[in-house]
Image 1 (cartoon, rainbow, N blue to C red):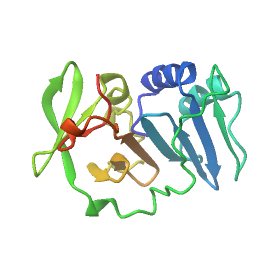
Image 2: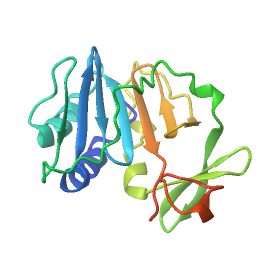
Image 3: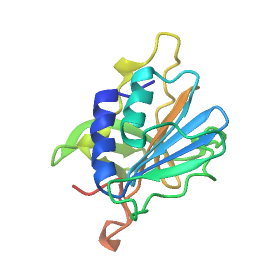
Image 4: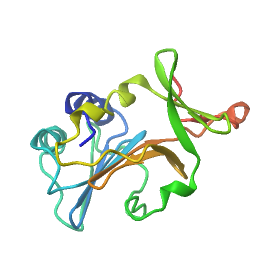
Length: 180
């Protein structure tokens, strides 16, 4: 998995105290979503440390065909619906390709598309992404692509998506994942 589990746990903790964490099981896939990040992973290949990070906040993994949202204040539910995303099946290569840059904005990661549009990913969320944590038998991710709800990166075992921030019209030319 190209996930740094310790950083994921920090993001999940923040989400748990805020809008919540949405968990969903679709066959062999587990979906973990916060207001700004979406992960879809094959349960058979996910690491025990990834499962432990999720269970720490949810208490358990959902059964096949079920979903739950957990938060410190269970009445909150601002998590995007995930059941119809199926990001493993989508052709992400039709979207604009984003490449990593050496630049940051207030410490946040900047990615740039070929047409000059940028995506800014909050540093805390970006820290979750880690090619160093790929398993020995895992293939490299395909790179970052624009997909309707955010920028997406995937390989054969998982999908990581940073969701776009919907906000100020002055920023319409920018694809902003989250404002600092």
